[in-house]
Image: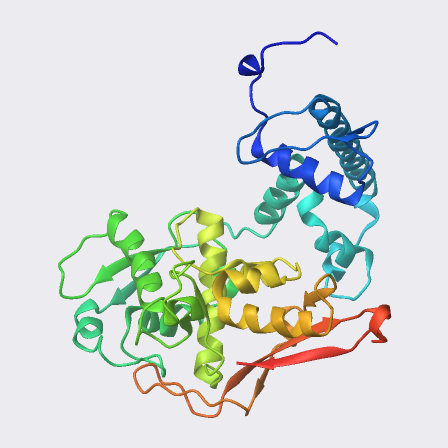
Length: 359
């Protein structure tokens, strides 16, 4: 093998070095030459004699995985016409399985389907209507929680738009003319876009409308994802449930018309919306303390490698830990119960056992 000056070797990417370390931990024979075991100094990014060989093996693995993805996408594309995609909610149905692995489907296959769905459901020749919003009323009562949906700009729009037929809201382009009472505005597009910005500001604020709460990392002053918000488990009144439905309609309107909604929701929420299962990493991103408790309990049971977080629809409202906050309209006696599925044959736990954490 031709030798070159080590100073002339370009250090490999740190991620490749991590892959090599992981591969060598799982296969101690990798990187061994005779009685000499080669190592990788990640901190100093020093390449050893067998680094090139290891990189080639890893890149070959990546290429094989890409070939598998291409084969999967080709098969899915050929079978799409035979699948009833409307049955994605049915457990174990082909549509449900396809939905769960949607992240493996290439964008060039998904986007035409997405655009076709928007086009087919589009409503033509809808006359734009006027929505009168009183910003002054909302500002004068901004210190009060609007849990009944009466004075905030979001609530005013909710009272007008939510009762309309969904067909009216599926129009493309500017949906309505926004009249901001007391501000003398003429809607040439600016006030219309401002209303969407105001909706998000009120949704992600305290007291606001009480539909969302800051994540636990913010309350615990943990400097990771403090700007993320989660659905309020106490927002269960008929009006609040309807307002949650209206948030979904706003998302649909924004998608069709490419409006920007600054809803800083974490992956814990978004994954459920797109039929993917949240993981403990998603929980850690917004609630490090609960994640630490779950991890500590799992380690006590020896389950560090077999812990998964059930989807959000398995979260229940219990009566174990009461929470209350007059500023945001929370009732006492509500809590979130996280059910964590565990299984490990080595310690005699059968599949389906769970640990329950109430926060």
